[in-house]
Image 1 (cartoon, helix red, strand yellow):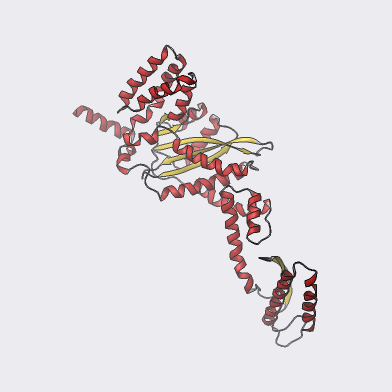
Image 2 (cartoon, one colour; image 1 turned 180 degrees about the vertical axis):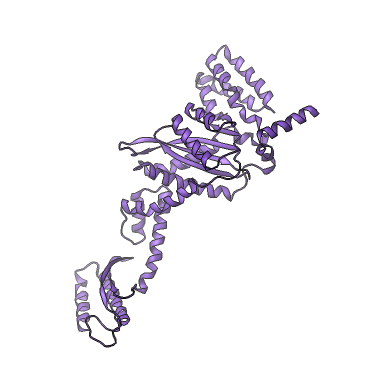
Length: 405
């Protein structure tokens, strides 16, 4: 007891010169508390000979404790039989989980490593290194992979495909990596994120492998695929999703056709082309489309040729229920998701590899997918009913109606 009193006295004498007096005092008190608890568990103090002894000490293990006064390094006594963990450190287990959750959430929200470090320090703890952030965020991988590799059941009538680009050091030098995302409407009318893949470029082989992975997981019943006019993607869709129609994004097409005319004429030509989209059915839209194209042919031949080549693809959405037209005509729904991905990833800047890209983007997609499941239906069940029928069945039913008429 005398030695302990002397140690405390020496600590108090340091108060005038030591700026971390309170932290050292706390460490001393907690250490003595642990020594006292272990003495009771052993039935004897350290080095004490006693017939009441029931256990013996077995060294110490280092255990840091983060407090508002800073980090306190403790030595937790170990026992030869059983284990000992001080009661005042139990909340630390929960605080560690809370810290992990905070760091993970900050990372997913697109907060940089430096800002995460500042956030941890603001919580009264020591800073956190990049390697620590990576280890803490590694637990996200399991959830993300489980989500991205989940089996697909049911029918998925509409599929939207698009890509965005993120900088990564996947092969050493910094390079833009294509991050492709597939979203769908399921047979219950809700939107879902179907899959994600990252690679060096949007080649036909890359898109083909991605679509085949979706089919292998259970993608079926697709009636229409909506995307831009990337040649590699178009070929992959034709190869893998046989039987599905293709809708060229109307927004991307308008940019292409307007690039063929002088800027001063773009508003008028844009308004003229859009009159085709305002028609009540596909037949009327086709007639209007050809009329507009013919009117442009003399002065703006390139724009007219662009309309001729894209007519069938841009108006494909009109073969489906009219209630679906606003959502099928473009990839706008997926563009908004890409903007959110870019917003989160821009803070990170350059990713160390594609695995970290998948971790962050996958977490963003998982979060969005959960929100879609609790929101209202994207398409009503009544309007989806004729689309969900097999093409042969739907064609037979249409033939019956035509014969009856």
